[in-house]
Image (tube, rainbow, N blue to C red):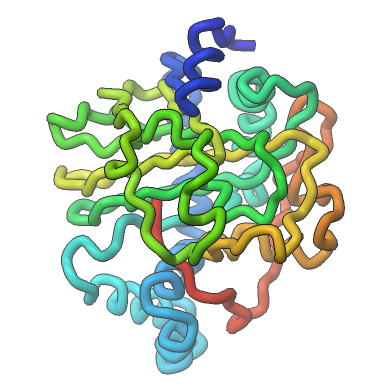
Length: 324
């Protein structure tokens, strides 16, 4: 397992984020990028559909698809036109969930000591489950990623949640146009944030609450940042000529339970990610499901082959807001 030193553990505990340089060999990231590209090409319509739902709303997204007809190519073109027709900067990225279900290579990487083992070390637990992975494509001209916390969008009643943000290429420093994540240090310990007692659609600005704002600087391929599920984070717009491509992998400590609706209003932007399991796990019940596999210690529970659920067209969740 890649050693996570005492300084990194302390930084994660106090600040809610840390950086692991050289987490993966460059060759492993190149192989991961090929797998991601293959899955994204096969499932691009899902990314377009999700973004149209979030930015345009359920009804308009369904109308766009209905008008396009049954052919997937026509649906993709119609969704893409609707998204590209929005004002400049309105689209922060395109996003695709749970690539591991279609790629054994991706699934095996998530359960490795580099990823799952480091997650267990940062959380200080013996057993870790995979919550989701998500590919983020920030195209040239895409706008900023707004401040948000990952756990505000997860139907889990837990504090033991961590996300690894892994760029699939070198990321320039912010002053050179890079758009890596920016963190509001210590915000994971602020129980007064809006989403604890208010509308999850109400914007939260991590820059106006007195948190130290930290940027990781330039990232080399193989570097990764880690952030706690409650820490506020954002990213700048992509002002470069090439797309910014990254994958975020989220883990949580085994033993967490599905959130009871009365406890906290959940932002539903990531609803597509959890809809394959959330109805099978009752509110307040332990979050155990084949789509929430134990990945540490290695058990063989996760296979990543032919696990992509078949979601009926038109069964789209409610409206959310865009982030990351």
